[in-house]
Image (tube, rainbow, N blue to C red):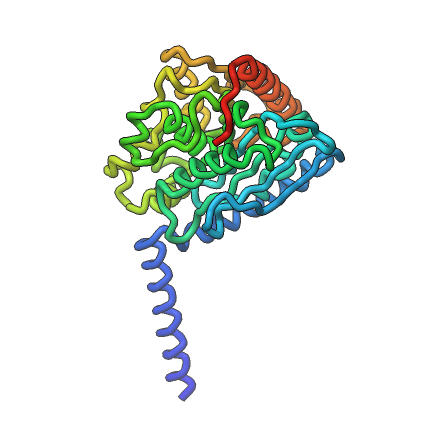
Length: 340
């Protein structure tokens, strides 16, 4: 009897092992669940470290809706007592297209708001069953909502800076191309909801901008394969022509808005950021880049900019804000357009 029970337990365990192995081989989503926990842990640590840098003069409005979907929400921050509409920094959070949240960049956006801006943290759908280009469509729609409701949101609709980190930087860059290149927008099948003249600039930190340059065999190969399989919706994502349109470096034009681009010297995505900066400069786009020597020590990791306890993080903040200030002031010199 005992032998039979032991055999039954062994058989059940074997079935569970086989089922688990097959689940990880046949779908990216079991791996995504693990990655989401890792990203969430990193976000919590970053937010905790930034807490002491948050100014006390910031007003927050959270979980406002820009669409009907459960994930189509945003958080809004601006200085207390601000008079009149302020230029807006609209931020798309990172997370490998399959994780992260607007809560993970909240304190950083409060820091930016304390410097005289309305800042917006956008949420978008990600995770099980959500595939490209859903987040791109949602961010595009969110920009339209912000412009239409600019007066209520304390936003100057003619002075918008579109920003993002990591996967959010890629999404922000892709939406900027959609807003400024009608032919690209038609190929993607997304009608832009933000007029290009309202877009004062872009801020792109630690982004991935070229799908075909993704290193699927290196140190982080498992992670790269998993997120691209999940986000594209196909295991053979390198053969998906529509998905490859997300490789923004190949598709930027001279109409792309002025860009601030940065990555740490220890970030495996830094070569992609440098390549995007070169591509934009070759097309005549104004670029302000912040990169670091290869031997910069200690090495600056992916998303270094959120660490305001180090000199490089503080430098990134000040140089990014100087870029934003220069371009929203330049934008103010142009005739204003009425909000729709």
